[in-house]
Image (tube, rainbow, N blue to C red; front, side, top):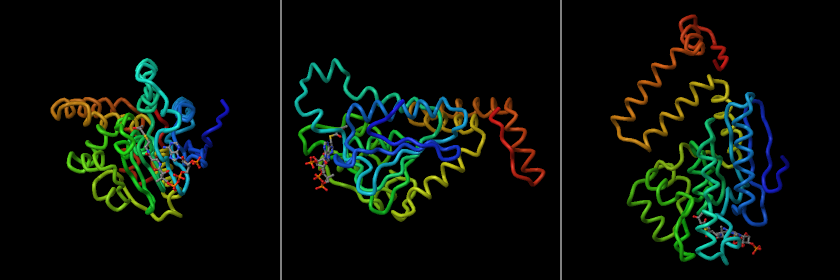
Length: 257
Ligand code: CAA
């Protein structure tokens, strides 16, 4: 597939997706949505890939859903198209996706970053859900995911005032896992992605699935799920290899089986 609004490349075992609509600060229109999801699905199906990264430019990860695309739409059109439903494809990707965020991650940009498994932010990153200032509200998960990330008080503050949160506040609040200098953003993110991609893929996917369970179920169910999945990992050769390598004081050679 050829892509027009994103750049797609493979670096070792990592699939890198770069949002590329610089003139619109990477605003997320339907084409970007289709291309990002298609690229992530292709990496998910590629046995040589173990992790993915989604990034933008130094000025903007993405300044939101494309306001110009939405502006004239009527309710019936939005409803019948189920506008934004395509992004759900990204949340069904099994391999980990890291968001490397510099500059603006606003509205849909913040929501896209939160659909990824974790966020590494540059010092200049700014997160926000400014939809209220447009007379609307988040529509790609912001009111739900932001609340789970940062709690009710801060999520209300962000959604009701539309203010931006800088990288330091985002790290303090648990929205991002780490903050790095802008010039090191991609290197640091690739290091994390390389590290994940070198591990046992089934173990990586099961870890991702289990952490996500924490958001979707009760503690008792989640703990039961975790324990069952943990037990099942003893069917993998990679469990034998990982533990043998530790005991024999050598690096593990995982074979994804
Ligand atoms: N949609 C469409 N175009 C956008 C855009 C967006 N979300 N954000 C920026 N652009 C365009 C601008 O219209 C401008 O295009 P022109 O040159 O053709 O006029 C270009 O990108 C550069 O933007 P600015 O001139 O505004 O750049 P700036 O540096 O002065 O300001 C900014 C940067 C503060 C991010 C400002 O662009 C801005 O406020 N953008 C909109 C942010 C926003 O409201 N996002 C939420 C969108 S709604 C949404 O996301 C719904 C949802 O839940 C999914």
